[in-house]
Image (cartoon, rainbow, N blue to C red; front, side):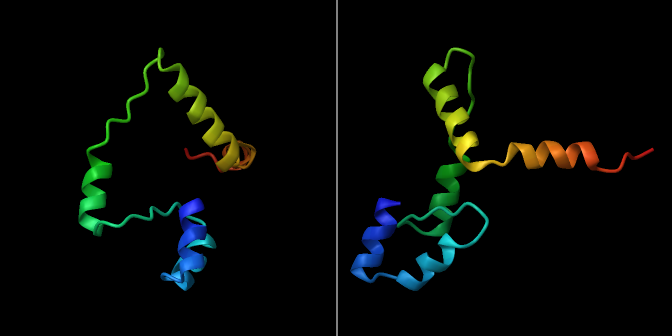
Length: 83
């Protein structure tokens, strides 16, 4: 968020950044081209093991701050049953 605010202050593609802040999907802002970024994201090791205490704590915090679990659980309870 700090980088976004700095970019806005410096006038670099400010309107695009402002628009992206309003979209309901995650957005990754990076200097390299799309292929390079997608390749780096694809190559990430994202396994979480039971002894990854810090990682588990971070995951819990991110979910609590960004995911509406109540809405998800409610939609699962009210979704139609398939035969």
